[in-house]
Image (cartoon, rainbow, N blue to C red; front, side, top):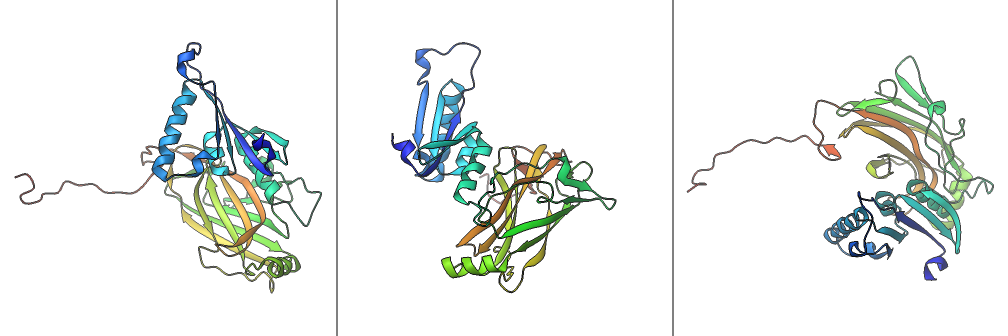
Length: 304
């Protein structure tokens, strides 16, 4: 079968949401297979497709979604199967499946025996100090990541949270990342594949399904850190937190080499640190709330 012949892909499974009664033949297909079909078309076409798929899912259709697009798998599927050279290497929830897929795409070349798995943060690797700072030490606490290797996040500090890891929309948050790398590994990658010798840190915020809501990185900030003449750095991100719906969210931190258009992941810590959004004074309709103003205006002759 052609699906199993691919070198590496994800098969996502969207389970049906069953109604109060049994499914009948008139409700449509029991199984729908989609092979990269949503990779084509414009945004409006894709939105229309997803609405139709959600409708089928609610009526009892199981959907088999084959793709290389991790964001689509995370956003739509409940379960995921990762295939490599025709063999299943993982079966489980969709978010973990996408991480297993990325770990296979970016294996750690400096540590061949590494498992390359990404685990969410737990209480052991997030510590609050007396100054209200949350300290995270991923490598000391066994938080694994994926990437070609040669770099690591030594520690991360988060200021502006209330215990335990609670944030309000509109509050100020300050995140410091201390990271280090092997300049010899960087020099080899630059010589071999033509990457710029620029080490960048990326910090992103995602929801429970792993859908990214916000992302920042050194490339976009025009921050150049020479990966050959230096071997460590501290970068600070200061941001005003958006007004998001109440719930749990996760920070991902990544270290990469190159430029915005041509880079490689050295180390990616997925869902490294969790925060919990509490309801604020601003009403959130949907995913997030934005600041806006609205007023009635009078235009001469507008009603004639």
